[in-house]
Image 1 (tube, helix red, strand yellow):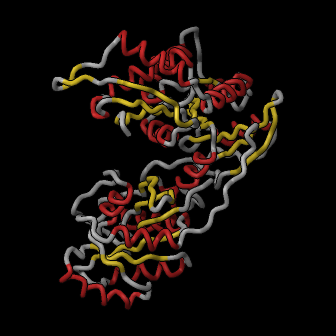
Image 2: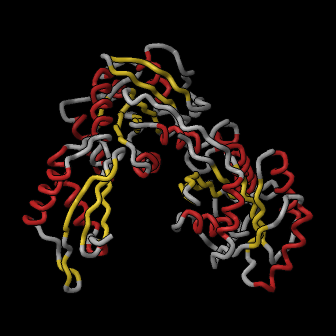
Image 3: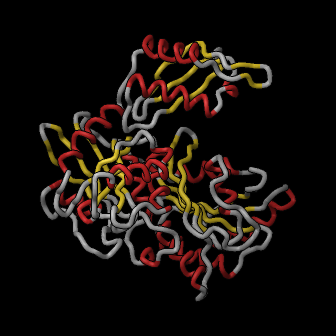
Length: 437
C-alpha cells in the first residue's frame, strides 16, 4: 500500500530542512544558515500516531530568473503535485515577505490541504508574531521551533488529520510483484517489453520518456507475476525534470508495492555514482534485490569480461553483496530466461521464515566459535534469538546490553545466518533488545 505523502514547502532559509530532520528523526537534509542550501527534494519515511507516511523536503521557492532558484521552484511544484498534504513553512521573525505571498499563490492553485507552520517561535513572547500570518488565508498558523522541537507534535497532528484514507491493496499471495528501477536510459522500458513480449511501454532513446509506473500481469512457467515499470530516477540538476510528469516519489511508491526490485544497469555506460544512490532506495526499503545488467549484447566480450564486470559491481555495491547479478539484453532477449527463476528465488527468500530452535543453534554455535570482543570490560551475551518478521527477514537478539552489538559483529552473525539458510537476494535485519524487554 502506498503511504500518504507530506511535502514541506517554503521560500529558502525558513528552516524546512531542520523541520524535515525533526520529523524524520535523523539528519538527512543538509542544514546550513544560507538561503537555498537544499538543492533538491529529499525523501524519507516517517511515522506519527501510528500513521506511516512519506516526507519530502523541497528546495526553497523564490521568484526570479536565476537558474538555481528556477529549478528549486520546479522541484517544489513537482513535490506539490505528489503530495497529499502540504506543510507551508514561514519564518516568524521576518514576518510575511513578498516571496511568502508568491509561494502562497502557488499553493492555493494546488488545491491540496495546507498546514501553515510558523518557524522560530522559540518562546511565549514570540507567539504574538503569529497573528500577522492569518492574512495569508491558510487557516490557523501553528507556531513551532525546528531548532528546539517546540510545536512539532501540533504540526503533525494537523497534517495527519488531512491524510486521505488509503485503501489497503489486496495482493495475491501467489503472485510476485516486482519493479524496475534505475537512472534514465538504462533500458527499463525495453526490458519490460522483452519480458512481456509486446510493446506494452513506449520505448525511446531519449532519457526520461517513461512518465509513470505501469502495472502489467503475466505468467511464466506456472508462476504469476506483476511487473511495475517505474519512471527513471533523476540525477540532481537534470533539466529533464521540469518537463517530466513524475518524480522520484512515484518510483519509491512502486518500490513500496514490490516484493522484488530489479536494479537495472547499462552495460555500455558501466557503473556511475547515481546507480548506487538509486539502488540505495530499494535496500533501505528492505526489498529483495536483483542486479540486472542490460545491453550486454553491445559489449565486446572474452572469457573474463563477465567475471570482471561482476567484480566491479561487487566493489561498488558493497551493501548489496546479497543481490544476485543477471546479465541480459532486452534488444536480443539474450539470457532473458535466466531472470525468471532468480526473481522467484529471491521472492521466496524474502518471505522465508526460520524455525526458532534451528536459528538459536546457529547463533549459539557462531558465538561459541567467535565470541564478541570485549568493550570497556563488558562482552555481548546473546540469550535468545527469534525471527519476528519476513519481507525482509527480521531477527531479534535478546542480549545483556544492546549497545554491545557492534556493526562488525552484527555483520558476522548475518553472514553465518546466510551461510546456513541462504537468503540470497534479500536484506536481513538484525535487532538487539535487552533480555528483560
